[in-house]
Amino acid sequence: MPTSGSRLARGLRVWFDVVLVLSGLAMGLLALWLVISPLAMAGGARESEAAVAVAVGAGPLRPVLPVRLTTSQEGLFSTPRLVRGRGQLRFSTSNWRLQFLTNVSLLIGALVALYGVLLVRNPLRDVGAGQPFGPTNARRLRILGVLFLVVGVLRPAVEYALGSLVLSRIVSVEPVLSPPLAFQRDAIVAGLLLLVLAQVWRHGSELEEDQSLTV
Image (cartoon, rainbow, N blue to C red; front, side, top):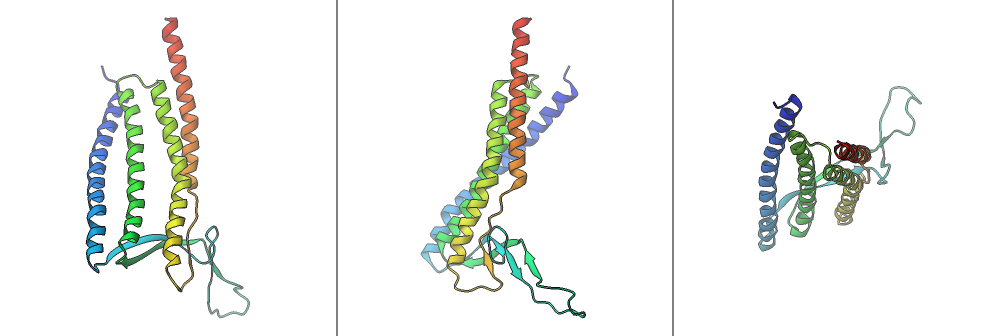
């Protein structure tokens, strides 16, 4: 008789299957648009909207922007400044290379997310089959942990490179903008936790194997 845990695992697997199908369809349409859009832009002076992450103020690690304000009391505020302000610089461009670069970064993120969903789905399938522990699942969790660590470090580097590329084409801008460089601590912590969980999972698979040999 199937347990509630196995039913939950099967339900989650179905949900992940739906996410995989929808994500694959969305990425296919995005890939097709990435091919067609630059050709359309290169053939004429057609503009398309693009976006790049930026930091408000000077300095990528700790952007600071001086703020002008008027108060009713002397000495109430001294050297006001906006710190760590971040956002997106959205613009229209007819440069197909710039458009291609900004869209490729989105495609890379989607591919990483899809691969992560695949890595999570397969262990759920084994849990539903009543075989949660195994060296394969431990390896999948380890790869997923490394993937989180790479995203936490690599994505800020890509955003910094794109921001530097866009801002280098601008002669002057107000307010002051800088390429952002903010490592994703949540992704890095999640990656470390997944690496620990992978080690625990591996130890569990070894214990289960020893027990099966003993019996």
